[in-house]
Length: 298
Image (cartoon, rainbow, N blue to C red):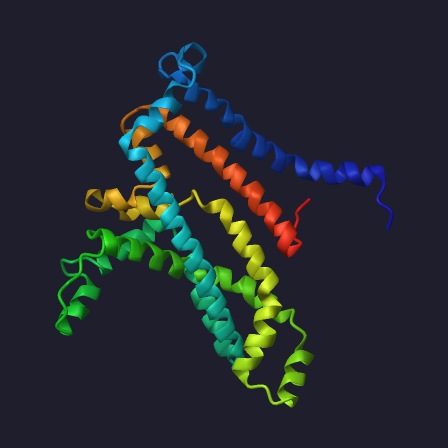
């Protein structure tokens, strides 16, 4: 079917509402970047506030909390990325081995549901369930003779809970990607392996894993773009002053500087640096995905 100029005009017209929304809510607010180079005064606006050049960026590197915040962000993100890749792969392999169709679909739907819950709701539930004062989990530990654990008041436990709850919330969504990749493997390979006497484990190692390897490489490389995203919603709803030294990430740091301490210029400078580094990481991960997984959007 030949696409005429009139058809192209119609398709472009269909894109217009989405492009307009993108421009208004994504590109137009980028004008606020200028605040990073000003001593911003809300009463004067960014048109009449004093310009300070790179003063905020220079001051940012002199702050004692900056490097600790960046270190926390990278450590938490890398742990989330590693666990977020490993758990869905293992779960997809196990679920793929299930032979009862209704059981497979039910489990897949159940693990997928937490993805739709916000961290505002989950944060309240987790704090209540894991509370040291009457929380259901600590009460269960008490019946086993184990001392209650202050999960959200201990720095080591807090990071464990961050990774565990993030994986629990998102691994069902990621599992779908790997299950879709598993359906693309030719069933004749499994039949041939069975005739040759290969065990179930050998079929997984020599057929299933190589079959989904391009998708694993793709997901791994694309996840590099999120190294500076530690998960603001989750940490903001779970952290407290007792664990702030190990839980404070760039986004929560920006929140405190910008909205609580009213240092708008400094907060914008931090956000600008984070965006620039994140952009470089996304470009790098995209190029790696194209090189090793033959993935490209354009």
